[in-house]
Image 1 (tube, one colour):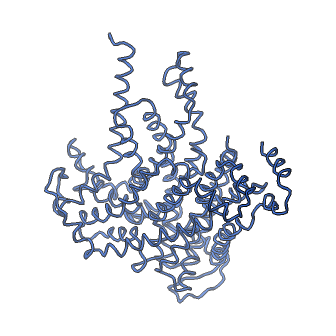
Image 2 (cartoon, helix red, strand yellow):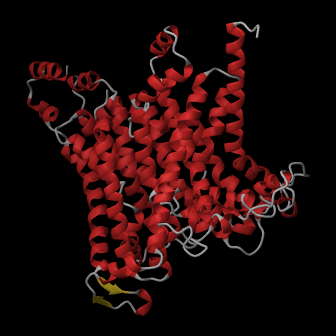
Image 3 (tube, chains in turn yellow, blue):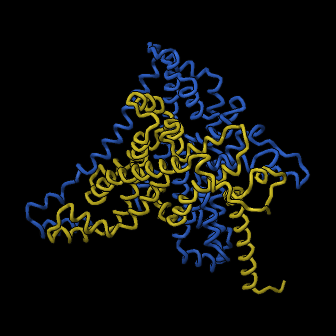
Length: 278
Length: 308
């Protein structure tokens, strides 16, 4: 009871810190366990009780290609995510530019309307999209996923770029314009360098959303165009115990996105909250 | 301020090239608006059309007009009531968990400086970046498994009989998986919002003798009203359409115990190939999402565009 106020504060701080660590470890545990399991043999993976200490093996990683044709699916994921993201940026940046710098009475309405298209539940249009894709012979094609991902991410990307552009002082653009810059020069020479950081995090957010999307990819692809989300879903069949292999594939599939996410977490908040939280 | 710059502009730059200044650049917005309009209108119109047709791909794909027959069938389908209830339970519970725990955990992280705070942050955020199919399968096989899952081991440590989570508590299991994915989002967002809270105000309150609880209740929480609204809105959009987590774990079962509306419609559409019925269900999902949207946009739409 002879603690000074300072000591008391310090003790409290240590206690709170400890609690935070416990919560973080609990929430992170499934990921840690997945990575750990990926280095086990199938027998160790299924052992009861679960093994924390075991002889690690690279088995699951070394044979990943021949067992599950991993690179086929990974390449699909890369191709689909990057194409959709670039296409989306190409359409969204000009729109965000004009809304941020030439704001009219209708701009806010337009933005809110764009947001409202995100409210359209995918199941509401599952049947038409499926039949359209089938009609055009695009079932199980990368093209159909690229188009859909572009469209479903468009509102978020427009909003995110818009909030970044909004923070740029108009004076800079006006100065460039007075110096005789054309619209294209103004965008490429002035706007892009200033907003590089914002555009990069928008790019990352869009990549993450495409990479992890699992409604359309499960429903519209089977093998040819299937991305990693679909490969992993194929491990859900009840027969056979392939936990270690599943863990290895999952670890590889999630690692790049996890790293992207760690790098850009602050900007992602801003993007996902439509600029409402900075 | 903007009017004064606009005026200055008019004086400085009287040449004809300036028409761009007043031009809203609508041609730059048009592609986005047109594409989104197309994306909304065409498939929705088709859904509406199919919903009035008797149309099953397995019956040779003949279309005959049936009026509201599909809706009657959908409403009286044995999966409809559980599907609706489960959807509401899932959205409601995950929202509650992520907002309440999100606020508490974010406050905990912001309460004091402690060893490794950066790492704790990174650990807490991570589940959000994991693919839904991966998260679901990891939980199904490595956490929930009744024989060699982690929870079974934990139960045995305490001498209890291990639980077969997915078979006995399917909806609760799905809620846990989905909460695990979305709680980090709430933490991240609320933590960022808390950092913008005026520290001087907090210090002043502390000097006036307010305890940490009082500060949290009267200063922090009101400050969080807007970010909480944002969390609710964004999560509602995604939670209404939870699909992959159910698809890879319980397949909606046992029975309809963990079927939500999205899964029910998927089942009509791509398992039974009943286009008409799936479309009727789809329209109902759209109506529900719209009701939620109207309520939510009313609540925070204004907040979102009127930046302070």
